[in-house]
Amino acid sequence: MARDAKEAALILHRFGFGPRAGSIEAIASDPRAALLAELDKPGAGQIANPELPASGAANRAVFEYNAERNASQKRVRREAEQTAMANPGKENTMEAAAEAPAKPEEVPLPRQLFLNEARARIDAALDAEIGFVERLVWFWSNHFCVNQDKTVMAGAYEREAIRPHVLGRFGDMLLAAESHPAMLLYLDNAQSIGPNSVAGINRDKGLNENLAREILELHTLGVRSVYTQADVTNFAKVLTGWTILQTVSDPDHGGEFVYIKRAHEPGPQTVVGKDYEDTGPEQGRAVLADLARHPATAEHVAAKMARHFIADDPPAALVERLSQRFLNTDGDLKEMTKALIASPEAWAPDQAKIKRPSEWIVAALRATGLSGDITRITGGMALLGQPLWRPPAPKGFSDDNAAWLDGLAQRLDIANTFAQRVGGNLDAEAVSDTALGPLASAETRRAIRSAESKPQALTFVLMAPEFQRR
Image (cartoon, rainbow, N blue to C red):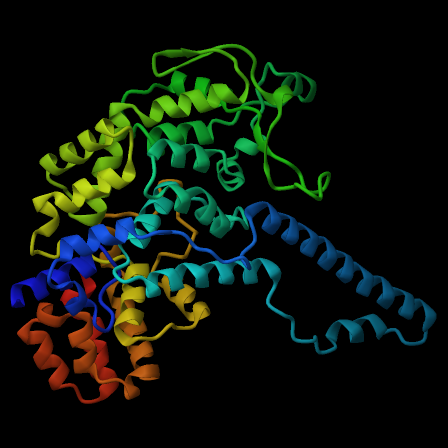
């Protein structure tokens, strides 16, 4: 039983977000069956919250909010100017108005939308029994990343393009991600126009290759694989016309996907050795479907999954096993995930991976039974180098341990602050039993017992090597 409990604790960290009260005991009898059961749970990976707006609705709401805010600011300046003109003897009227104490402003709408989406995401991780499916959501969201700084739709994008397909087919997720307004904005395809299209000739506009390049290099085939620069250019031509409706001219559907024929580069294109006739938007869908089934794609995504969950340098046999399962099931991600669970490499006792900041923060909350303040949570993620939905580049946040080693000292600062705030009401040894169970080393247990205060003891738990790794 002790061995089963240790394996259960390890699996809760490796494949989930760490244990919460009772988690280790709940799955100790059969950890593998528990992982499989989470995959089969109805609605796994979904967030059903009617208060979270669809991406287009969020885009339109922010557009109107910004327009009204700008109008309000101009109105205030205009009234101040009129007051100054009506009172020529009071030369400092405008200055006085500008220096008057401002009313406390409500949280700006873009920020509130972000916080609401972040809260829903964190709650899904906190409420999960294990968190395996949520970890898969986070993994694929990072694979097909967008940036909140470039679009207010990042949270909605994850709900609409990633979550519905996280246990479905890779090809469906690929199409949903690449045609989503957030991706079209993030990688500039919304502005890409075929140079020989009607719009391209009339407006003297041209091609943007960003989306095509990142699909080939990052999302499917992998860097330095089977594609050439000519493939990038041709694929970019295929994707012209994939854009979004402008809210300024379409207040009812602004921010939604639209295919505009007059912006599409006419004619057939050759991508990765295959010719595609000009069938409008179907031309792009056909290319994506073939990329989703390509052996190079299978190898690329298999290696990424193995690197994320198992080791920086994953065993070649594991990558090959996952790749073959991907190909044999037409990119069925649930079957690929089951192959990961069934692999002996997944059950190695060594905790080879450092938790990324977001995983560590959620693990700390689960261990202590707290939900946390979403502003503090997202702020902590940013301080630790993983700001939510703000990756440093289209390749997303790194899955290599080296990328997170330098931030461990900052984790200590955050752990100290957190422990000072909540540690006085918590029994650190009980938290250790919840979070680590039999994984806790004798050294960790001694440190907790010898701590000079309850907050210090809790800090020792959260900074223990076995809590930092998975």
